[in-house]
Each structure stands twice: as C-alpha cells, then as structure tokens.
Length: 303
Ligand code: 13P
Ligand code: SF4
Image (cartoon, rainbow, N blue to C red; front, side):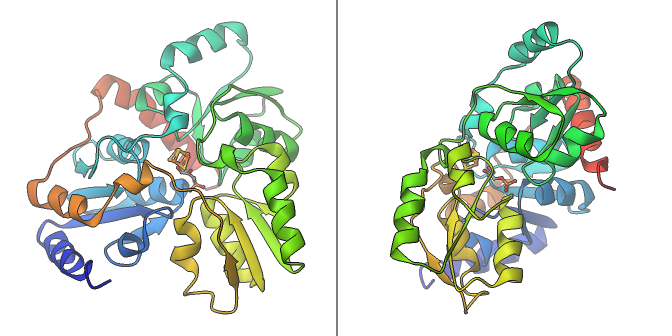
C-alpha cells in the first residue's frame, strides 16, 4: 500500500475537483477497489449506477464494454476508459452481422445479448442481460425460445434455470473457460469443509461440481451471508483479495486466474485519465440510440 498511497491521494483529490465518479468492477485490484472506487459491483450494478449518476465525469475501472454501456446511458457526460485496450474475449466473439444472420435463421426468437458485447452488437439486440439477471430477462420476454448470446456457458447455465428453450453461440470467457471439474475435485479432497462457488461463465461441468453459481455480486453476497468456513471462488483472482478482509471467519482457498484485460487498469492510468480527461469513450449516436434501448429494457426488468 505504501507505493499506492500517493496515487490514491492524488486521484481522490482530483476526483472531487472534476466532479468525477469512479465505477469499479469487482475484478479490480484491491488498491483500486478499496482505495479510489466510489461504486463497486458486478456488471449489472455498474450499469444501473451509471444510469443514476449526477457526476460530470465517469471513470470506468473495468473493461471497454462497461465504459461503452456507461456512455450509452450518459451521452452528454465524459466517460473515461483508463486503458482503451482493456477488452473482453466475449465481446470479441460476436459481430453485428452475426446477429443479423441469426435473426434470419430464427425469426421467432428474441435476441438477448450479454452486456459483455460491443455497442454495435447491443444495437442489434432486443434486450441485454448480465449474469446477475439473465434468467429474469429471458423469462420476461414470454417467448418459447430465445437467442442468448454470445456466451455458450452462461446460456447453458440459464437453460438449467428456466423452461424457455435457449439457443446460443460459441463465445467464451478466456478466464472462466480454463477452470476444470478435476481441479475442484482435487481441492475438495484436500479440504473436506470446502464450499465451492462459481461464476456462470464457467463450463457446465465446472458449475455442476460447484455448490453455488452466480454473478460476481451474488458470489460476494453468498460469502457475506453464508459465512462458509472455507471457500473456493471459481472466478478472477481479485475477488477473494477484495472481500477477504470483510470476511475474517472465512478461509479463502485461492487458485485463481487473472483477467489480463481487467488487470490493464492501474492507479497511474486512472490518475492520467483524470488529469487529461482522456481517453474518452465515444459511441456513434445512431448506434448508441439503439443500443441504449436494449440496455434500458434490461434495467427495467425486475423494477
Ligand atoms: P459480473 O460481474 O456481471 O458477474 O460479470 C463478470 C465478468 O466477467 C465481467 O467481465
Ligand atoms: Fe471478459 Fe472474462 Fe475478462 Fe470478464 S473476466 S472481462 S468476461 S475476459
């Protein structure tokens, strides 16, 4: 923390001067999560909070699609992305033209896209979802079958939670696809009191080997509420680091995989963004208008 302190102090001072808010995803490193973030959460919470803010400047401590979502909801505000190269394998896996072709093949199936997509893909969608509300979103449509894109594994998990027929795509999260059920079994053999909680972006056999599956916020709530003696969180490394101090009675077993995109965001880059008010995320207004509808429809579900 000693090396982080000068950055934290300067960022927090500049944030006030700029009337800026820092939204940070649960995968940010602890010095960002605890040191400078105003709002932390899963993708759903960040989208909702971005829609509510009255700050002039939004700094997205997360990946590019999250900053785009914030910009869609706040076209007149400055949205800063500390590193424009912080992408996402899921967002890379599908293009707007893929959705247009899928619509031709399945004209009766509404298109639900994961927020982990570009604004251009959202613009082709009926509604967005996150891992925190995917089942509710799918069921809100009243359709017999739904295209749930682009995450094959999230879609497979949704299919286990609903009677709606789920069609999908072959996108994967490069972090969660690497966990295996064998790894879980090895840890269970080592610790007989182990509780395993997994993110729904994991392969189905990993989720089947876990005790609970949910979005990053739901995983955090699970640990806070259930207070397991020992937990293995099948997700990005920073999750356990960020919540360990608040759960002193839980022992965190920590094999983890880092998201190289999330880890591009650092305190010096956040400071630079606040100093220069760059780099800014912009979305073509015609695309933004259609993409915003899909995000707003999602936010309205469950209200
Ligand atoms: P949630 O925080 O919405 O669960 O998503 C996880 C993720 O991988 C975001 O990139
Ligand atoms: Fe994308 Fe996976 Fe990284 Fe999240 S953890 S940003 S889904 S690659």
